[in-house]
Amino acid sequence: MNSLPAEAPTERSRSAEFISWLCKALMGVFFREVEVKGRGRLPRGVPLLLVANHHNSLIDPALLLAHLDVDPRFLAKSTLWDIPVMRQLLELASVIPVYRRQDEGADTTRNQETFARCHEELAAGGAIALFPEGISHDAPHLAELKTGAARIALEAEERFGPLGTWIIPVGLTFEEKGTFRSRALIRIGTPIDVSAWQADQVRALTNAIREGLAEVTLNYPSAEDVRAVETAGDLIAGKELELPSRMALDEAFAVRRDFIAAGERLRELFPERMRALQDRLESYAEELRRIGVRDDQVTARYRKRDIGLYVLGSASLMLFWLPMALVGTLIHFLPYRLCGVVARFMKTEDLPATMKLFSGFFLFPITWALVAGAVWGAAGPWWAFFSLFVTPVTGFFALLFHERHEHFWSEIDAYLSLKLRRRSATRLREEREALRTELHGLAELDQKETDPSSR
Image (cartoon, rainbow, N blue to C red):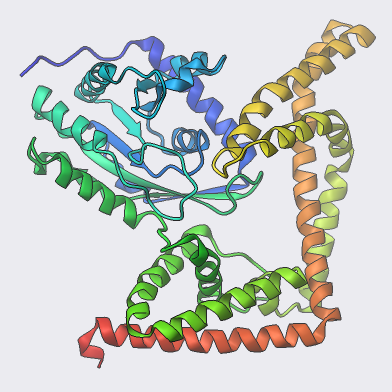
C-alpha cells in the first residue's frame, strides 16, 4: 500500500473558487431556474466520485460546479486542450485529460497517468467528477457506460485504501436543451459505497453505477416516445388552476419516469391499446402546438380578477425596468444575436447551449470594453470606469424585461386563442378528459399486474 499524497496546494483552491464563482454567474444568467433535489445525500468529509449523464456538452460540468457545493476535478477528452483559450480555462479548473480511442492522434497509454492522478486526488480526500457515457449525445436514454469510473474508485481503494470513497450518481434533466433562459433539474441519487465491492468487480460496480444513474435520469424507449410521454405526464399531473402554471421540473420528472416504467409493462400486455394511446397523445400535442397553447393553459379557469392582477403586476414591473432595459437592449443586441448565429452552425443538439455560453463569455465583455472606451473618449476615465459596472447591470435589466415581456404576451396570446377558437378549445378539453380517463384506467390495470393484493 502506498502512502497518501499531500493535500492539493492553496493555489488550486483559489482557482477552483474562481471557476466555481464564474460557473454560478454563467449558469445564473443562462438558466431561468435550476432545481436541485437530494442535496442532503452528498456525504461530507470523504472522497467522492461524481458520475453524471452527459447531454449538454460543457453546460453539464458548469451546472455541477455551480450548484453542488463540491470542488471536484473533472475528467475531459484530451482534444479540448487543442482549442485556443479553452486550454487555459481547463488548466485553471485543474481538469484532467482523458485520452480516448476514438480521438485521432490520442495516446491512450497516457491514461495510466490520468488514472494515477485520480487515485491521488481521492486519496487526499478530494472529489473527481466524470461522465461515464464517455460522450455528450442526443439519445433519449443513457448510452453504454465505460468502466473508467469503477476502475478509478476500486484502484484508488486498492492502492491507498481503505479510503471510504463514495460514488454519487447525478442526473441532469433540461426543460429545453440549448434554449436560453429555460430550466434545468439536478437530481442526486443514492450514494454507492465503494468498500462493498472487490477490486476485480469492475463490471459489477459499473452496472451498479448504471442503475444509480437510471434512477435519476429519464430513459425513453425511443425518440418517438418523448413527446407522448411528456404529454401524458402533463395530463396525469395537471391541475385546474386560476391561471396557467407549469409544473416544477422535479414533479414532472417523477410523473414521466413512472409513466415510462408503466408503459413498458403495459406494452407487453396491451400492445394495440398502448399504440392507439400514443397516437392520440401525439395528436393532442400537435393540436396544442397548432393553436399555440400549452396543456396548463387549456385547464386554467381564467377568472377576471386573477387576469386583472396578472396584467397589472406584469405591466408595473415592465414599466419599472423599461428605462434601464432600453439602454441594455441597445448595447447588448448585437452580441446577443451573434451568439445565436454561432449556435446555429452546430449540427447536434448537445452543442448549441455550449456555443451560446462560450461565445457570450467573450462577446459581452468585449462589448462592455468597447462601451467603456467610447465613454472614456467622450467623458474621461472616471466615467469610463463607472460604465464598466453600469453596462452589465443594464444588460441584466434588459434580460428581466424581455423575459417578462415574452411571457406576458405568450400568456395573452394563448388566452385569446382559447377564447376566439371556442370550438377548438372545447374539443381540446373533451379530448383531454378522455385521455385522462384512459390513462387512469391503464394505471389501475398496471397496479393490478404489479400488486397481486389489489386484484
